[in-house]
Length: 265
Length: 350
Image 1 (tube, helix red, strand yellow):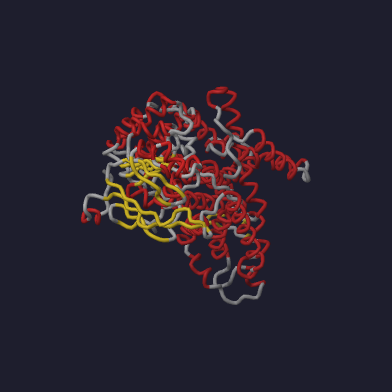
Image 2 (cartoon, rainbow over the protein chains, first blue to last red; image 1 turned 90 degrees about the vertical axis):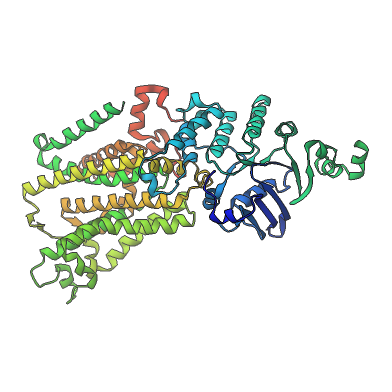
């Protein structure tokens, strides 16, 4: 595991991430409204919710792109809400963005290598030393995402699905304890999405995941607890099946009043 | 492939090193000066071609290097006990305190590197910390070059004003106009360029260079992979500043003068054009472009003096619109057709 903060050793091993009464407001509009939730190391959580529910804002807040107006975010027991983004990543959180953010001019291999590098300080990068474990990690990840045959290609030449996989590979290569995946299966074919879900299941335990997606088939394949966000608050939590039957969830997704949804159940 | 490249570099070096044998003195002195300018172009290729930071103010660092050395030359060429000539004309009776350290040749030569390096690092730190980039950064650098040249002109009693610093005949004990000194200067310049090229190449081939390219490609992606882009950008920009300072000092020796007209807005923009014409993502391109444009300038402005500005303007527009990878990019395209073609032309400002 990548270097835990010293104080983490003092904490109980349980909560990896704790979102503690977090509110994010833009000019009075609350993108997140007094949201609390926590997750354990190695666990997988799926976040769903209609557009504008605050899913991406939640990931933005965890990774430091957006700062909480109120509340705080604890990672391994440390308050990370005021750290610079790159420091948060160095603590062990890495995020895949909604639009694939691969480095187009770099080769597939270099993309993974940049992500897998443990010592990210500028002056250390002047010496060209790569540790054996970093090189092994690159091979391992290239195999995992099925791009080993395209390792020397510039990332710009990859197909859309492959770009998604490459970015997933970069996030995995970072060896972060918590991986945030924002719509990892967007634009993927059915079988590609299936393989992505399988990869998440396979890596669970080694990494914790928060996955955002709209595609309920994909969400079902991940087979993990689902949380539904609505207007910046947690609306419901449970299995995919429970969420399907949940009257309020149906209401926010389909615009049906809760009473109408009861009949459906 | 790697070996062929090395042989290519060695060949170029031999051709350059033997130039004094076959080039007439005038052409040789031009070549020497343009090779000195090419050192600055390497820096632009690094910060613009690789890291995507377009600086329209490299003249500032060029000027700092030039003035640092020229101040020393001014002091050593003045009669013992008296002030440099322009200070006497302006009625100064005491040397300004900040001129004092430049009596020492060691300090002056160190200042050629340290002064532009520090100013560039400070500027990059202040600007990039605020996450200013692209066209805004280019405008800031342009404004600084303008401010610096205006300042130097306005402080005539301390800086020599519009005329700059000139009139030195002795350089570290050698007569500046002596052909042997000129020849020595040519080899010093060539060695400085070769060394600068080598170091820049190492920088680009290291992980540092990869991250720099990655930052141009997606600064946020890099940040969210746990890197702080700021020191990478500051180091690259400071290094380019140091190269510009060295270039300025060598050109000052070569021409025997440094003046605001050599480092203001127009020269700063021309510097970017050299690199654009040669191919900004390639170090060889930067050197080639510098030689091409400057020899072109010498030839055109002696044949048709009023035409030069139009020609250089047109060349810049042509390169940006039709051949964003410059002469080197065109050559690569002809040699290996679609194989080596870039996936997308780089944007002028990122």
